[in-house]
Amino acid sequence: MLNKNISILLIDDNDITREVLRVVLRNEGYTVAGEATDGGSGLDLALKLRPDVIMLDVVMPKVSGLDVLPKIKDMLPDTRILLVTGSHDKEILSEAVKSGIHGIILKPFNAQKIIDTVAGVAAKIKK
Image 1 (cartoon, helix red, strand yellow):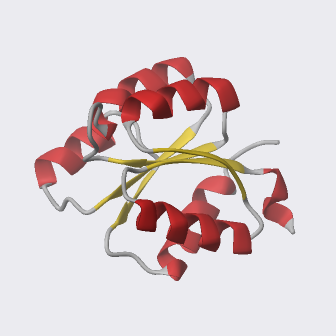
Image 2: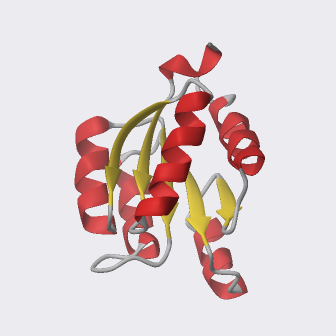
């Protein structure tokens, strides 16, 4: 399958969200390289794994997705970042877009939305 070389890091504090993402992505042939439950540990794992794509939640304990987003962009400029959020707050979404995210998946989501959004970003990754 075409997606085998794309590695993805999941950063979300919700176990069920991570599990759904993991199952859907693996079924599509992507490699889920790692998972983290907050922005701080997510940044550490991102620097270690250097994934092609990071799926990043906004609201998390300790360090939020918006707090860690600029650091990820600065340290891993080639990594594509997809925001995964239940927030429909236009200000938060606007801030994320200005920070350079590559897409948004709004919760609640379905498998097809995940597949389509990740495929659109993965198609632009040069391997």
